Structures are given as structure tokens and as C-alpha cells.
Amino acid sequence: MRPGLKIIDFHTHLGDLLYGEPLEEAYEYAYWTFESISEWTGFRLNKPAPGFKTLARYLEIFHAHQRNNMATLKNLRRFSLEAGISRSIILPIEPIRKSEDNLKVCQEANLSSNQTGHKIFSFASVAPRDPERIQKLHRYLASGCLGLKIHPIIQNLPLTDPAWFEICEEFGRYQKPILIHSGVSHYYIPYFKRSEYGNAASYEKLIAAFPKQVFILGHCNLTKPETAWSLGRKYPNVYADMSFQSASNIRKSFRQLGADRVLFASDFPFSIPKYSVRVGLKATANSASQRDNFFFGNAARLLGKLD
Image (tube, rainbow, N blue to C red; front, side):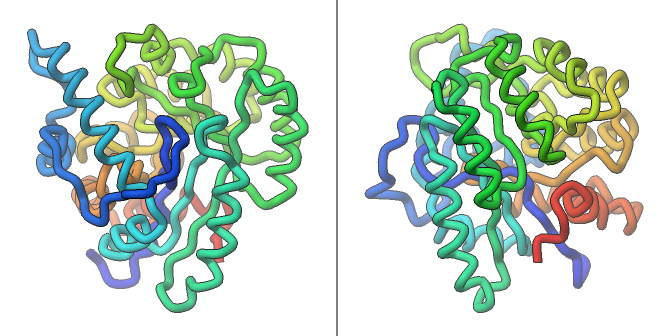
């Protein structure tokens, strides 16, 4: 890594994101699964081999559940510092992981940041069916949240639902970014149709309705980044984070979206940050300015320098 490189990890999590239970027996190590091969290969093996879609789905679920049990502050800080990351954005997903829990952890953790050099900051999240969602949204933003996280799969509501339009309308006054999970993903053993809610092709109506709102497509739509690129070419308010994307796809994202709309992210604990940093360094090997913007500058322009 180049000395002095600053890194903001735009996409991380703390706490149980699948069931909302306390992580009373959290792992204190990086739990390896068959899906870890994707990390080791620089995320070049994300797509399942033909004829193995069902097996790949079960392996994805197993990986998600095992890595979910690593999502502690101690682990986030350890693996972030190991990768040279000094700032991490933690994303709640209500009603599973509460925004207020994230804010409390941020407050406590940043008191000790002078000793480690690592700070954390939180986005907000509101459950789209919560009757108090608008009041909570304003309360979270007033408490210091830097943006809004939407996860249509875990929150079990497609982006075409009017509730999301209402939330985005209210949120627009803050001029802060919205990060949306993108990519068909599987978290539960039963085959739920909600897995398809992550297809970014269904996000266009929402994106088009709020042309001044920055929308960040988390994971760049995973195994189908070309959908995110298509939206980005059409709508200048579309950005993407590069968690789980290969160096080749990161370079393609620079060309398709513009280098100022591509963000570094790891999605800890579902991926270990050092692998994402390694891939990002490879993708930006030919341009020091592009490297600085990818790892830090683009995020800082959206969020501030997070001092």
C-alpha cells in the first residue's frame, strides 16, 4: 500500500443483520467458507457455474450466516486497521438493526479513536412499514446520521412501493446520499421472492423520480454490474460502491459511471476488508489521483472528511 493513503470504507455493518439477536457468542476470527474463495481470487469467481445455481445459493446463505456472527466493533476495528482503513461507515437495516444502536456505538467507539486512529460513522435506516418512519427519519438525521440505507430484500419491500417514495421525498431536504443494496441475494433457506427485490433494474422509477438525490448502488448490483452501469449512464445521480467487484469491474465502472462516482467498500463482515483493499489497489495501479479519489476523495465529497 502507498504510504499515506487514506481510506474510507463506505459499506460496513455491526450487529446481527439477519435476525436482530445479540451476538452473544460472536466469532473473534475470520470464519472461512467455500464463498471465501471469491475473496481469495479477487472477486473474480462471483458467478455460479452453470448447473450449480441451487448449490451456490445454499453456499451463499451459509456464508452470510457465518460471517454475520463476526459483526462486532472489535472485529471491525481489527480488520479495518489491518487493511489501512481509518474511517468506516456502518449501515443499519431497520427493523433488524436499529439506527439508534449504531449511533450509540459510534459515540462510544469514537471516544477511544485517538488510540487507534479508526473512527466509525452511521447512516440511518427506517422500516418502510413503520407508522413512525418519518418521525424516526428526522430524529436519526438530527442525531448525526450521514445518509440513508435501504435494503429491499431484508426489509422485504420492493423499491417500487410508494412507501419508499415517501421516505425519499422527506429525506431529500438533507442533501445526503442514499445507499441501496443492489444485486439478487439470498439470506434465508426458503426461497423467498424477496431475493429478486435486489435487482437494480427495478430501481429506475425511484431514481428517476428524484434527480437531485444521490443514489449509491451497493455492490454495483453484484453479479450483474452492467445493470448498474446502464443506470449510471442514464442518470448522473447514480453512484456505486465496489464491494465484491473484481479489479476489472472496478476499472469498467470508472469508464461507465465516471471515476468520481465509484466508491471503495468492503461490506464487512461479509467480506474481510484487506481483500477489498487489495483489489482496489490493483484496479487503480496506473493512476495515483484515481486511487486517492476511489479510496477517499469521492466519499469525502459526499460525506465530508470525517475528522
